[in-house]
Image (cartoon, rainbow, N blue to C red):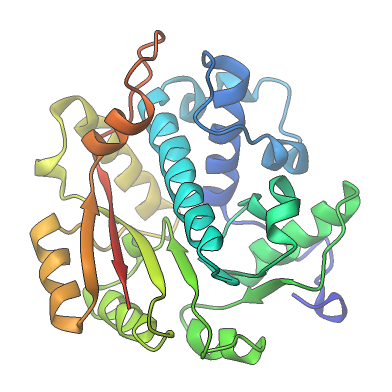
Length: 287
C-alpha cells in the first residue's frame, strides 16, 4: 500500500487469522525443540501480544496446527528460493498476511519484486507496524490491498506495474478455504495468464471425513469459530477434485504435496513429537 493511502490506527485492523498464524510461527521458536522448521518471530514483534498469550486455548492446545503452519511456511519458502535461483524476479504472495519473507531474506528479496496481496486492513496495519519497528519499505516490496468481495486481485496486481511478460512464483496459503469452487476456478484461470514457466503453489483443505481422526475435533471447532466470526469456511476439496480442475484448466507439471510428504521432508528426525495436522495439502504446478 502506498504511503499516501495509509489508514489511521483507529481504522486499521489486521485479520485474526493472520495474527494467529504469525504467533504460531513465533511459538514454534519459543517452545519447540531445535532444529526449527522455520525461524520467524517478526510477526510476534509486530503484534506484541498480551503477557499470557501462550496460555490462550488457540495457542496451548494446537501444536499440530502450529506444526502445519511452520511446515507450509518452510515449504513455500523453499520453493520460492528454488525459483529465484533459477532466475525468477517476481514473487506473488496471495493472502500474504504477516508473512516476513522480505524482512528475513533481505539479500535475496532485494533482487526481485515482491507483491503481497491481502485485505486492505491487514496490509495497512502491517506496513504501519513494520515502519514503527524500524523496517524500511523498499520500492520493490509492493503491498496490493484487495477487497476480495468487490474487486479483482488480478486487476489490482496489474495496477501495481506487475510485468505479465516475466516469469513469477506464486504462493497462495489460507485463501481457498474462504472461496467458492467457482472463485477458486477463476483464481486458477487468472494464474494461467502468467508468463510461461511461472510456478504456483496453492494450499487446499481436505473434507472433514478425510482427516486423521485425531484432527477432526479441532477442525470442527475451527469451523464453528470461523462461522461465528462472520468468515465461514466454504471449500474443502479432495485431492482428486483439485487435480482434475488443474488438468482441465491446462496447468502443467501438476503435483500434490500432502501432510505425510511434509512430515518426511521436515519432521523425520525430531525428538519432540511435533507433527503437522492432516487437513492441508498443496497443489504445485507450472504455467
